Length: 396
Image (spheres, rainbow, N blue to C red):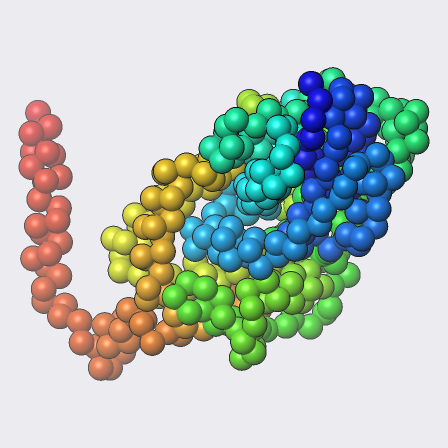
């Protein structure tokens, strides 16, 4: 043991108590905080890391990188784990792992560390990513390896004089980034109990949201969000603004019991206003612009992609291959989508595209109908032929 260890440092309870734990095992600690849009005072986080005993505390601004390299591919895949969760933490972990490996090389570290528990998904995401990126590095997991509960962690923090934000009365575990916010632990561990109001931070109570709906227009260029209400914005800025506007209407609350990679069920509460709006708008524009068989096949692969990323396999050949497929599907996905926000709901109310496959002359039931109705009789007869043959063989 000994040498230098680079710790993925969030500033929360688990990573803060990890610093003295790692130092007790003979390492100098370099704390690495990656800014993925968590909205914290990162100067304060850096100072906390130093106060906890880190030799050095580094902060990397990776917001644009996160939006471009991780959020955008997931959006193009309409990625929702188990149909609900838009991969908030699952997307940031491989990015953080990438920077952990890079900084470890730069400072000559032989080890890296994370603050995950043995029950969580993030231990898998970090360590599997690191196995792909830097398999020679030792990985320390202080909370998991010491089997430190949150109560023990808070007692350990008090013993070591570690400044941490969690208290026994509100022991929530919070993870936030540009794509959303996740909360677990405390009263949330009872799936029957409604989440208390203090759990939510970026979404309004839908019952107290504005009484008037708000409409906004999102434009896409080859599957990439390009503008909001006609204003061209970098992707990270567009997501931030949409988070505020949709969150003000109570859009984006997800309360679910999900199946973790380690085999247990966990109750999680998410706030994902921008993700919910953008995935709904993007999916709707695809409905307008993708050929039928391509759209159906893509929809079959989307949950595969979501499970893959959720399970920590971002740096895998299958994810890379799926990204290549999804990127190809986005070539015609250009246009505008009009979305209405109202008291917790997000509803697409209009869409248009220069690549639209919607043909009014074929879709109409009124005058100007160009559909050849006479052709339908033969089509239906041939389409149903296998079942007619099968049915005749079954008759007594």
